[in-house]
Image 1 (tube, one colour):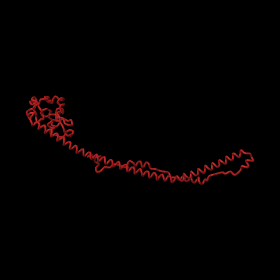
Image 2 (cartoon, helix red, strand yellow):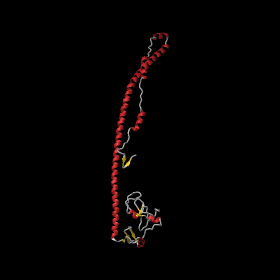
Image 3 (cartoon, one colour):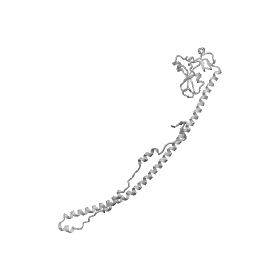
Length: 278
């Protein structure tokens, strides 16, 4: 079938007299006889709000009888909705003919305009209702998103506070174990440094005496103080250091738990805007 010259609904050849090719709002073309019976395009389902004669078909295909270009048309066909010149009448036939000045022509035009206006208004009313529904759904979606985001901030802030509390508890435990040992070691370091300093001073005194004359050495001879350190205390501290605790944080276990920490769920069958979320 030649779709360029034939209506794809009734399979009739396009012609200016009976099967005028009309372009719909969506751009698809069908004959006038079929279009007058439709409110939506049968191909894309778009509402028909306006039509016009498809002049390109007359230019592209010599098989289709072209439109009359005479501007002085005095006759009108109420069946075909066409204005005709005298030459066109002989090709058109006598059905539905009337003078272009006949009041019925104005009535015909007014009826066509009223019908088109009603279709447009009906389509707009339906579109406005759909728009209202979509706006309500948008408000619902935005509101739910805000609630979820606020809840996320609240829950994670609480989680952060719990982590900070646990961190402080562990820090206190660590300090309780290590601070006494560290303090004892600091004291031991001070005592050892004092002992080393005292022994060094005595050694320096001995070097001075060796450089003196014999009678001066005799006068300077005395009991030199040798400072030491309690090995038992050193051993006690070393033993205590062996018993210090080790810290173990299960970071990997916590990190593996994060992906399942929260999830989105749906009410009912999980549908939205009439589409089911699979």
